[in-house]
Image (cartoon, rainbow, N blue to C red; front, side, top):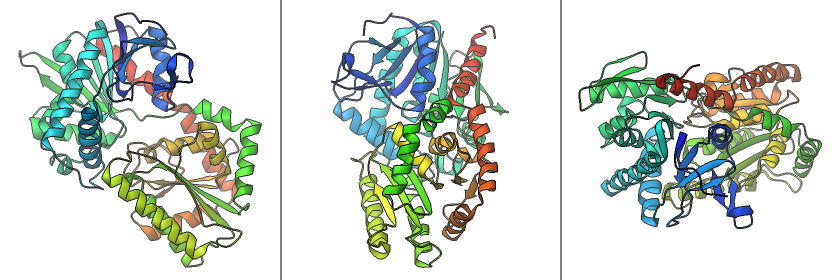
Length: 473
């Protein structure tokens, strides 16, 4: 690592830096997993760009440094900042509100004040390293005020913002006490991206009704305090995955051998059902377990023939709603296993862990049916990961219609996860699907995720930012 240059032409701003602290790694840092990093790292390496974000440890103060060809600009957050801005306003106000109030949001003024304060810190950090006329791409709901703050600090830069989670319908959004301030914050961007067309529509509807601004086909006329007028654009840019990486892993003999081991460890059932989610109330894990338990109760499934593997990776474990959810899920798993396990077979293999990508691909290959039953999801990349991993063109994806992925993955078996009887029927349809029909659907799904991978997503968004700046195509 070395000191980075002081100015960058392309800057990414996100809550977290693309690295994790690791004392065993060279220089003390290792690259974070995840699609966003794999999409944007090559762009920043090519341009000598910078990434602004929190290093992940409260109170850690660091000077800018270079990692793997990227300039990293750390933003310091205190323990109070993490509690109020991140765990509080971001994840106990915005997250539940924007996910259709599946869990009730909490509105606390001290959380909002911390959110404003921290967003200002991120905006100042980005402004300090932006070259004249730089492209700045702000990521996600933790930083919705940054675009306007940055525009006030640096009116010369071109600003993009991408919203990774849903944007709610107006009747829900209007509950937010600071609704106008958040809309004004987002309208500081030149290009405002969403996962789904309906999310972009919800945003422009809120802008019309709350701010009285003129909108047409996603274009929004914004008047500055000095009377100047510019156009902000809100549109859908569905995010994706590094498809090639999953395809390559799935073809490795050792990964395929691991998939076989997993099935054998489960007693080699006829059918392996699989769910993998962050332990979050938006993911519909309880609905999935209820449907599966009723199928066993009704003898439509037998525990000797079918096993459900549920990976629930730890998430926000200091937030009360998440602690309660974990207790509920584990009680349900224990009840179903207590009722239906035999000496040789278990109904549900529940795993409260995170796994490396290689193990996840082996699990995808071992699974006959992938269950994605989210109650509300901006995209749900797990659905796309499963498809990209199925190099054998086998397996069935059962997919909630309330995910962004449902707009693209039309050959999945679609479900309304609130309809437990419909979910049960969908699971049985997937289990009973003939190999030829599985192959037909999976080939079509794989074409889609190959054509629209995460590199394509970042190219399309950045192309629109370059167009705002007037760069040659």
